Amino acid sequence: MRRFWLLGVTLAFAACAPTTNTPTVSVADRDLEQQKQFELVLEDNRRHTERAHRIYTRIARANVDSCPNVRALMGVHTTEKQSFKGNELIAAIKVYNLIVDHPMVFYSAADAVQIGDFVTKVEGKPVSCAADIAKFAPAGEGPVNMTVLRSGKEIDVVVPRVRQCGYGLKVVNQSMVNAFATGADIIFTTGMMQYASTDDELALVMGHEMAHNVEDHVDKQKGNQFAGMLLGAVIGGATGIDMTSTFGRMGAMAFSQEFEAEADYVGMYYAAKAGFGIKDAPKFWRKMAVQNPNAIAHGTTHPDTASRFLALEKTVEEIEGKRAAGKPLLPERKIGQVSNPQAAGTEEQTPEQEARNRRRADCLAAYSATPRRCDQY
Ligand SMILES: [Zn+2]
Image (cartoon, rainbow, N blue to C red):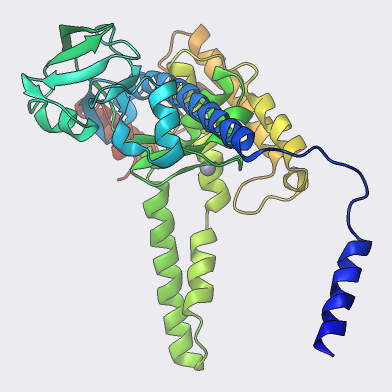
């Protein structure tokens, strides 16, 4: 009985089997091709990492005065043998020329260090992995003495540290078109790196993600979620129905679209201040609409792509107007509106608004590095 059952299953599959003579592939040839494909992935990763850091460093340095989180950094990013294993390690040794046990430079904002250099010493101490570079760099913001191996020769170099927004940047190998901010880092998928095909487009998305961190959106959303959970617990206590997670979810969604619109707006200022082209940047949202037609008319956590395109066109106009008038490129704030020419010219200000403007101007004068903090009172 069991034999008949097996025969039946085999026949059923045979009936659906392919009918052409497909080429046979030897195991040896497949192994060679697999190795080649691992190499292609690593070449791609190197290109994305270099591009991401090059653009982000420009934005993070140009907008240092807007960041609450500032660090003095060399802008040197490396890779090392320890990050790879198996087939990837074989490919990395070949593609990245990882022939010695020292971190190899992937990107450098400093002229003194070149892509492909191996960092052998920092402040005279031997370096075997990337963590050693940060560990041996002296405290403070002064330059760092390094020895690098370049074309087989060891060279002593002095690498300056430059103050910049201190958020980390990560590129993850995922095909999904996505980027997000954690409050401490900004993260880009390789899918997004490919999709934002011009540097101006990528600068727009990087500015957006950095704005989420600078404007504290992650913490604010967590706060809203917590407030929602509290409200849910109170209602749950009165009704006997547990509403904590439902209200928590609703709280997390509160202002979600507004936060996204704010990140678009503020992020475009960051890209503009770093010298990236902004004129065509709004078109990114037309491109995104083609990628995701559902978002054209339906905003969920984010505004719909039509609104985002139109709001960014207005932002471009605003920024170009400030440039033409020689005004600083800072986003307009709701409180005070001291740097908004339209509001100042067309609206009578109440004594309360005037007092608030004065307080904010004093605050800005005292804390010119962080105008955002001045908006919090
Ligand atoms: Zn966002």
